[in-house]
Length: 575
Image (cartoon, rainbow, N blue to C red; front, side):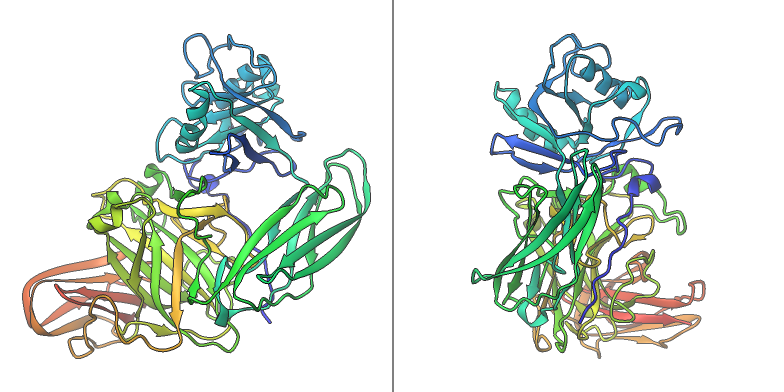
């Protein structure tokens, strides 16, 4: 049976200078949720950035350390000239959640001026589309701030403001939950043949009162597609006031039926405050972390670094304009299917028409990923896919795009997976600077699973992914036998040969095509998916090309060839 394990979600803003699309950690000593209660069209929980280090790093963070739930109607701050909130406000904000625009002064000063006019909370809107979330640096008046505050994306602010700008009411809460951080299942969608028993489901319980609570019962109830309930229970003997405790259920649960499962976590401390999660066992042989809600989903969005971080040089390799996200899946015990297809989605595919995206499939060296790796060096790179974005992929944001997974050793479509093994499917773009806008990989919701789930590759590999816990649309399709056909033809082994392999100095590529290709492109990638060499030729049918690789470090590389009518890939080993 697979044992569950946990890992740390990395705070990418500390590495990337507060410019990434990530949620930051507030100095609050408990969980907080930014929730829109009404109107129903925008109701839901939203990701946000929190107060963080002041500009001089003299304080760890600013703002309150503990709050009770506060709720109020949203109202723009008015400083008599604008809604920037950089001078004392002139409107009465008593009992309101103040809405403020970013810019011109410190975040803390904006929150302070809202607080001074009676606001019970403050939300600051990003002013730049696609710029994501940041941690809010402190400065002026930060030691005087006592109300909660949050930073939201430009896109979310546009949703919120649409109602109040037309005279409507938008009700918002800084909600302090008693039940949060629940974990269940290994993925949202798992093929029925890859069911894994799981244990160590967990949830955190927070005592919002100032007094201790004794004998707090915590339950996790799994309802299967047939309506049958299985309940697990643990008891916290004593939970002190304003403290939390993580409860783990050691019992094993094994899904069986195809369909949707609900898992409800709650406690006797506040039975009305529960967390519900879902997962699915499917018959269509698809692994997915996303919840398949690609329409009518207020949380559906693209996720990526800021344009500045996308353009920033990698601290080790010096590479610029690179970004990748991954999704991790565990195969079933005793099941050896073939991985055949990768499916992904981009919010801004229209920006990348004609540009290549790579799909790289990695296998854990021994059963499961540790969750602490910072690069791909210990993984087995076993498969790859290559896809050029077309105009047809841009008809709608978040359109599903599929490409065949090729065996990295043979170039054949599909490759056999080992049973009870961890795999990571990575979607990556390695740009040449002609597009400076960061790829925005579609995500559907925030969630923690029982093992490594979403990953990020930017300045390094982050096995915890973005700490907003956003689940990317990066799916893997499997089938029980070797695929016999794919949408685009692959070159036969006799049409494309690489030798000598392994090599320590030069490598040759022999092309022996059935017909003339007006154009052919040969590219060499490293284990991370970084493009190292690119060679273009015209009017090719039979030829041999020679490349010097002696300057490359010893390791595993991928060589990809694309003709007018077919493609393939080969794993290259440099000694």
